[in-house]
Amino acid sequence: MNQIKQPQAILFGGTDGHGATMTVISEKALQREGYCVRTICEKLKETGRSIADIPKYCGTGKPEYFWGSTFLHWDYSELGEGDLIIVVDLPLPLQDQLDFSAADKAIEKIKQLCERGIRVMLIDHHKRVITHYDRALKAGAEVVFSIGGEQFCHYGDPDCFSLFWGSIGAICDRDPSMIPVEEEEISPFERLEEYASWVDREKSTLSQLLQRIRRDDCDIPVFDKREIGEIPKDKKVSFIKKLEENGGFKQLEAACEKNNTPYGVGIVPDGSAVLVINYWKNESLIPVALRLQKYPKRYGHDRAPVIPLGSTGCDNAEVLANEIINLLNSDAIPSGAVQGVRLSSDPDAIEYVAQLFREIPIAYYLTRHGWNHVETVMANTQLLGSISNLGENDQQLLNWSALLHDIGNGAMNYNVGAESEHEARENHHIYTVRILEKWCKEGLFEGIIADEDLTTISELCEKHRKRAAPPEDPRKKQLCALLRIADALDKTKSRARRNDEGMTASQVIEECRRQNNLESIRHWEGQMAIESIRLHLISEHIIFEFLVTDREKAKFIINDFKEELAPLDTIIPPWEIRITDVPRCEGDIL
Image (cartoon, rainbow, N blue to C red):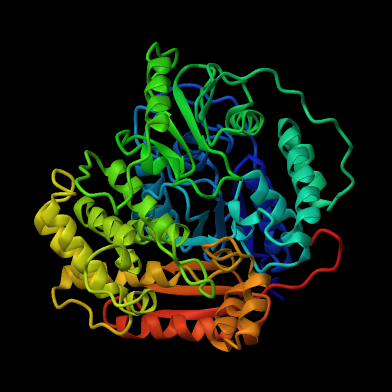
C-alpha cells in the first residue's frame, strides 16, 4: 500500500522584527495545512562582492545577499511537484553591494524551480520600493502583496496568534496604521509597543526569539528604556554621523522622538550608505522617498529609504548626508493658491500638490480624500505598474496621474467654474482637468512635465471614475485601468480611522447619526470592517482577498469595488474576489 507523501515547504524569512514575526506566523499556517516545513531565518555577516567570492550561504538578513547567494545555492532536491517555497519580507533587490544582479540570478532560479512543478511564492507589503516582481511573475512565481495593515504580510488565514504577533511585527516596522486614534486604542497600543521594543532587542539572539514566538510566549521581561544621549539636530532633522552596528532605523526613530524632529538622517557604520526616515508617528509628512527622487539608486521603504554610496568607507557619506539634510530643511513650496509659482523639480511638484491637499476643505462625513489618500494611491500605482511591466515613461505618467487625480476637489480655490464645495466634489474629475489646463498656461510644470504628457495625464484623471468610459487608445486604456484599480484599492480600515479634519471614526459616525446621514455611516462602517486587502498574482490571474471583521458591513464596500472593476474586464487579467474572516480575539491587547 502506497504511503501518501507529506507535502514539503521551504520558508525563507526576513530577520528584522517584522520579518521574524511574519516568518513564524507563516510557518504555523503551513503546518496547519499539513506541510513539513523547513524554516530559514538567520542573520549572518555578509562578505564579498562577486559571485565567486561570497559564501554559498549568507542567511536571510540582507535581501541582496540572500537572493544572490542563499536562494541560489540552497539544496531543493527534497522538493517535488506541488511542493512550496515561500519567501516572506525579503524583496527582490536593486543591485547595490554585489557586482552582479542578484535579482537576475534569482529570477533564473525561480524559472527553473517552477519548471519542475515547484510553487514559488513571494510575500511582501506594498509600501516598499517595488522592483522586479513583473519578471518574477513571468518566471512562474506567485506574488502576494498586503495592502493596508502590515500585520497581514504572511502566508495563511489570520487567527488570534497571527493578529497578536502580526501587530507587534507591524509596530516593529513602524506601520502608521497601528498608531492609536480612539481613546480605547491607546492602552493596548502602548502594551504592543513594549512587546515590539522587546522583539527589537531580542533580534540579536534571533533563534531564541523565533522559539519564543513559536511557543506564543508573551511573558516578556520588564526592562528600562535605554537612555539616549544628546543627538545633533539641524532644524527639522536629527543627524547621527555614525550609526551603531545594530542601530539603523530604530536608532534614528529614537533620535527623532528625543529631539521632536520629523526627519532623521544617519550614516551606516562602514560609510557605505545614508539612511533617511520620516518619524513614523507624524503622518502629515509626505514620504521622504518622494523628496529624494534625485537619488535613483535609493531602495527600501518609502518612509525609510537607503541611499547607497557604492563602496565602504566612502568619504562622500557626510557630504551626501548634509546635502539630504539641507533638502529636508528647505522651505515648503507655496500652496496652489499662490500666483506666479515656479517649480524646478519633481519633488517640488509633489510638495506643491501635497500642500494644496492640506488646504482643500473635505466634508466631515467623507473618509480620507486628502493627502493620505493620494499617497496611498501613489504607492498602489507603483505596485501595479511594476507587476504590469510598464516602461519608465508610462510609469511616470501613472505616478503623476495618481498624484493629481483628485485636485479637482479644491476647485473652489480657483476660478474654474465650481459652484460649491459639494458640486466640486461631485465633478472633481472635470475640475481636475481645468486646474491642470490653468497650471499649464501659467507654466507651472515647465521643464518637469512635457505638454504632451500633461495632456495624457489630464485624460487619465478625467476618466479615473467608474462612470466614465476608458480612453480608446490601448496604451492610455491600460494606464487608466491601473489608475482606477489603484484608487479603488484604498478601501481598508486605515482610510477610515479618522477624517481629513482629524475627527475619529466614532466621532464622525456619531455626528452622521445626528444628521441622519445613513449613507455615510455605511461607508465608514464598511471600510472599518476591512482590515486589509491582499493582492494575489498568479500567472494571468488576480485575486483580491478582502480580510474582514464583519462580512455584512464590508459587503457594501466590496460590491462598490466590484462595480469599479467591472468596466475593466476586457483590459485587465481575469480576477476574482475572495473574502476571509478576521477573528475577534478576547484580551486586553487585541
